[in-house]
Length: 431
Ligand code: RM4
Ligand code: MN
Ligand code: MN
Image 1 (cartoon, rainbow, N blue to C red):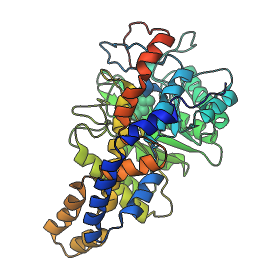
Image 2: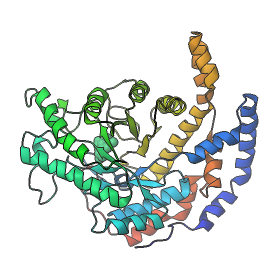
Image 3: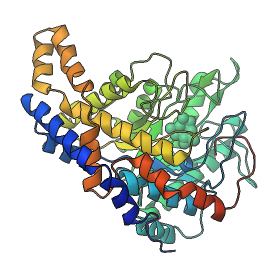
Image 4: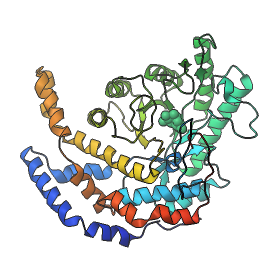
């Protein structure tokens, strides 16, 4: 099904007309400020314009917790409507041109047609995600015993086959990454042997790896707990990198910001994974307590900046290759998901822009000279800059909105969709 872009160019133009004089003034003032530091603002803007982050198809629906889900009128109920909402996000933000699908949630009968449909909405597909953490109606073997690490041979086989099917779907959609997150683990001490469950996982994951096309990657996503609350099979970056090293060069690690023990130094994990060529991707979100899936940059924006600081270092020092796949992975329990993703994409792009402002020579010089305070100040001086004019200007030059949320509200998108789309029933769960 061919579609046209969901929002009219007029709407964005009208919204920008009210704000463009102020943006020009702010951009020029910031340009002068940065020039005094020897930074050319247009060069930073060009780098920001090249940056992009994928959005998850499942993030387009109202999220929920294991206690409840509060649906909103007009939320999408299938992949076609989700793509339409993702197109709204990209039309306004111009930074989210790809969607990451999840299977079987986004299952359709014709994936070539789905790819064309997405293209007509200005979208492509990012990493495909397999789902072996839930049972589906009619499924032969339950994942209650785990999936790739299950003690039940048939269940492991079913999980392997599902992942291979995801690769096949991804090929039709134009993806080149398979993200594998398994909820496998235990809820009571003694429930399973900690060594043998990893053996089973590695053996099954190797069968998935063997089915990867040459230009594909398999990204292993670790998570400390939930749904397994005593031990998870791939619980941390240590388990993840060991598994990725054993599986082979096409296997890398994916860091979801909410999947660590409290107070873990995530930017250091980023640097470590990159050091060993295993930094494959990111799921951006924010958290206060655990895998909270809150909006990116809402709780700890400084941590997000420090992570981007490592990513910019990695860009400059690629050690033979650096091509991480960036994605938002959030659950929007009380906000309009489009608004949360617009705000999150902006926060992510802003942290990237700030990291680009770090005076690397000053930083490295201070590090070599053991001048701790000046090394810290090199970061601080970049972090405290309000880079919003750079990000807004890059966006508007690409056809997006200066004030993404104001333009979105002007469009009355959700109200219009609430007339057209069928209502979602009440229910619990993440999607
Ligand atoms: C998990 C993990 C995965 C995501 C699911 C829905 O906690 O973050 O990336 O696919 O949630
Ligand atoms: Mn994730
Ligand atoms: Mn998660």
